Image 1 (tube, helix red, strand yellow):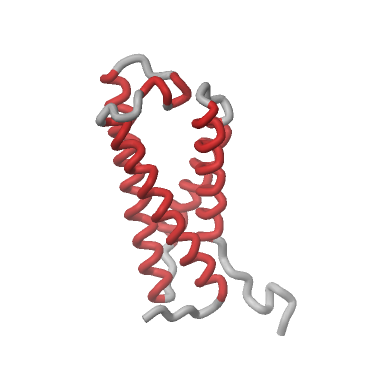
Image 2 (cartoon, rainbow, N blue to C red):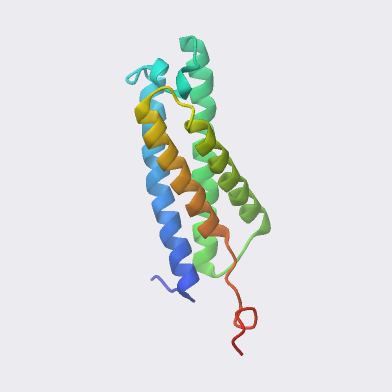
Length: 145
């Protein structure tokens, strides 16, 4: 049973669900690159020079995305219980910064698809991670007593 304590819980949970969907698609995308269904010279801003280099980059990317997914699943379960965990929140702040920096990097992609789609996905992911970890203002902080 879904029990929301406030609208912040609802927006955080919605942001988490959207991130689960995005990370799922991103994982499939990286698996397609890894298995060479998508040419590696069309991704990573065209900077990869060999299959071995692509395998290294893609292995790291897949593992990192799985790690992010695990952290976000833990955050979702914590929200369901109405609890917080500082380490999980710090990791999600790091994800938000990572996505923001990645957004800047995508602006230099050689492929127009990577430029538009990559920039859009990383920018949305940065915003969603921010929503996931933002703290709700108490009534006193809002000026309401």
